[in-house]
Amino acid sequence: MKTFTATPADIEKKWVVIDAEGVVLGRLASIIAMRLRGKHKPSFTPHMDMGDNVIVINAEKVQVTGDKREKPNYWHTGHPGGIKSRTTGEILEGKYPERVIMQAVKRMLPGNRLSRVQLTHLRVFAGTAHTHEAQNPEVLDVASWNKKNTRTA
Image (cartoon, rainbow, N blue to C red; front, top):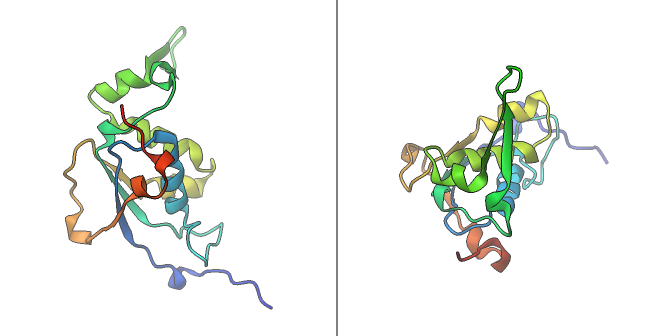
């Protein structure tokens, strides 16, 4: 028995589109992270970029459970006393609601050089329109996989 290790010639990347309307944020982010890494493929090799290109639409309509909508997100400007915060609800209702999904997926990937490359294969759009129709993406209906994946407001 030999252990299979994928080479760049063995890698086949697909395009996948996911509708985030009504889907719980954490469950959506874990599915996206798994797709970006390529762990859904039987030929998964940890040190290769085997994942698919993922397009997420309707990012503004993603759901969060419990009191997480009021949970503050902190960042630092780099200047003394420059700690800032904004709640998840404020970000979702603000100008760039797609940042909530980007940050959740980024935190579910390992913190190394490869995951930074894999994160560039994620495209998140606030509305229903996206600019990647030419790639003929396959639709993944994450909401119907498990009843816990969705939540009504």
